[in-house]
Length: 208
Length: 208
DNA sequence: AAGAGAAAGTGACAAATGTCATCTGTTTTT
DNA sequence: AAAAACAGATGACATTTGTCACTTTCTCTT
Image 1 (cartoon, rainbow over the protein chains, first blue to last red):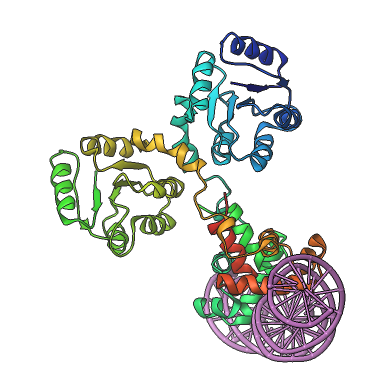
Image 2: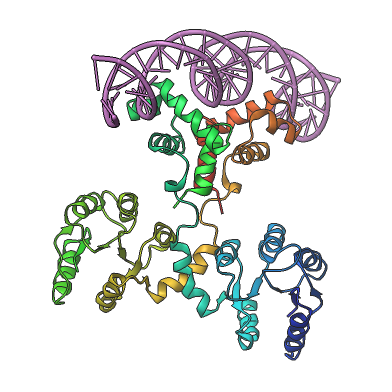
């Protein structure tokens, strides 16, 4: 099994290579030092598994993973990272990472690689424990702290449901002109151009 | 501790009530049978915890939870559901459910209630095990199976980024008129009215 | 009661949007 | 080669949208 190792700490990279190649069935064709190298080396060596750090100088591991997965959706990527990278866990999971291990868990790396090679997902128990917390904490600034007043917020929500001005007016018992005025001020406050961008903003930043 | 129980199966509801009220510190002020009742009863009784099924006749548990959380964001909601409701888990977590238990896990309900009452999150181990799988599998019918051709899909994506027709035309090296025509056919195929609804559609149905 | 200030409305305008019928080249089919 | 299919473009049109200046109406303050 070919395992490409990417970590911006040279010492870690070499240690990993040593450990992994002590296994009879593992080879490490190359060591990368950042996301860009990961992409290039992945393309060159077509490893069975990519074992990569997340926080790195230059391109980070998540963006590299996204790029690699875009061309090879079956890529098996296993992140090896430090505990404090909480906020990355969700993104890694979404991307379709096959695993997410903590560097502390040194001895579980080899078994994890075997498991991933066999098609399993591997997430360290500390990681799994964090998932509900992470998912259940509202990720983005909630409506309450926007510089919008009540009406503007209501209108924004209706825009985000796809209503046009006339329908919004009927729903809120306002004239269409008033709705337009509120919408206009909302757009200005959020520095957006039109209702479509507002709907997008809503789904990107404000959704449960 | 007041626990509102909502399940559309009367037998389950009554069983739960019996079990819970055997505990000295738990009372069950009412039994609801669907989401709409859940909302009304929640408002009426202000329970400490809402214990609710997800799949129910009439309004489902998730929509009810969303409504309740909209007015009382500190509501403690614990879903009790069957194993097959996989695709709901993520939504439940996002909403900020405090727990997600399987009905099989009957004996863990009481301790779970105590834990939630104490501010903890409780997710059955089978549920936690599923999370990575669920998150890493693309949830929705992906672009490939839409009745749209290449150009229409590209345009849809750009609309979903908030570009106007002129910008889309420049990006794709098409005339603005052509962009409009493609957009028009896209809207018709998806039975949508305007670009805002299209952007919403994109984020609701097609986003990773 | 007078006046300040919201909240809501009006009217006018330019720009953007969505629809339609039609036209122009290419490529494919037969 | 003729016909059909296709991608792209055009121009006209009715609507919708966003902006702005201004008015009306209500509410609160003093």
